Length: 547
Image (cartoon, rainbow, N blue to C red; front, side, top):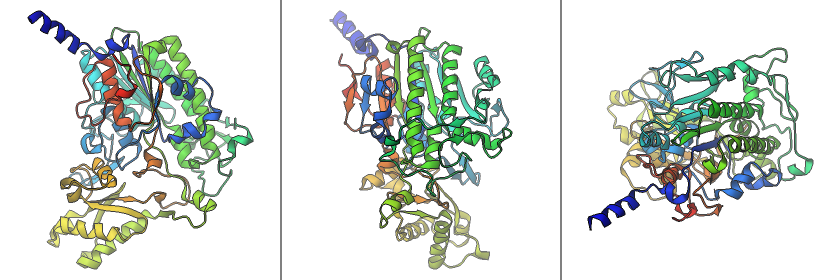
């Protein structure tokens, strides 16, 4: 009897990876910033065989993968990918929030207690991230023998995917990849070598050329439309010069142009290859994790919008870069030894002026943030009277969170919950808004609609405002008249690619409901590692090879 129990215990404790075949040597998680799922279907005719198509044909492609929170932004999205949790647990409710104790706005990866390494500037770390990631669990599982490396264009992408206990995390400032003293006190040689190579500066004066034929733009917006932005000084039409506002020398504006082009994608892919070689990833006894966050897709998307010629050209260029990187992986680690995950942190809404140019009567608009703030203050003044010396009722309005001036409320002996309820009711009269909910309601109530549920997942009692609001579909909170925005709970912002390719994964297209929160738990299952501690996501069992 004891022998039978012992054998049964061995079967139960056998890691899942042993039932799927050989243990993977490397897991690569790739995030394409602001990359909608429908880019895979709208632009698929122009992809080659080695990039997106390879992943879709040989991996599990989840066509119904969406974020289930309301704040579809870079910080919150990247925090979800490997923690398997939303802001209500991981604390990354938006890119920024207001800290009442410090009486200042807080950036999601800011940390004044550490210093940058490789550049000067404000410190960065995962101090504000509350829950651990798959990478953290992998490190614990292997006695910290597994390596976790995270690199990205943006600090918040690299840091939030990297987790709380990685080996190395790097992000780009101008032409230099940097880190912080949270991780190390000096850049490793392979990062120093990249920085000294001058690759990021080598694109100065080059042009981003069009690759696609005219027929590729049949269902694409006109070129050079007034609602496209030119904040990066690359112009509104192809070819786009990559030099910034000064054609004679490299200035700060060059780096904005560089980021709004495929050239910065090439540079990051080069660093990813250097990480694999410099850290000997996939060569050790224990599996390693490499996270890569490409952000140029976001810069291009904001500038030109999701229906622009630049976005389809960027998708095709990204496909080529992915194909080259996957080939490199096969040569240096072996795709048979690698699990590759492709996803995005969020999508993007159509530009309102684009919709209106095609359908004049469309209910789309840009709501001025300044006007909305004025509306909040005047609404409360109408109910509760004027304040001393015209002091505003609202302390801050940050990313859909409205923070009341609590000191002012105490002076006037007003109940914050009552004032918040009045403000939420007033906001519901604003045409562009879909819903406004008080802090108290989000904290204590089980609210009825899916929209309420999404808002609750982006709510944290210590960080969220007294009132949270969301706009209607196709509405922007924006004081400009150009470019595209995201941050809403709707599918144009929430629906993203989710593809997993590797041993133990059954290829095919799956329409079952899924989301990036499922990536961490699924990787844990494939590698026999404990789930991310607070995970909300599920294991994507339908795509796993049966034992």
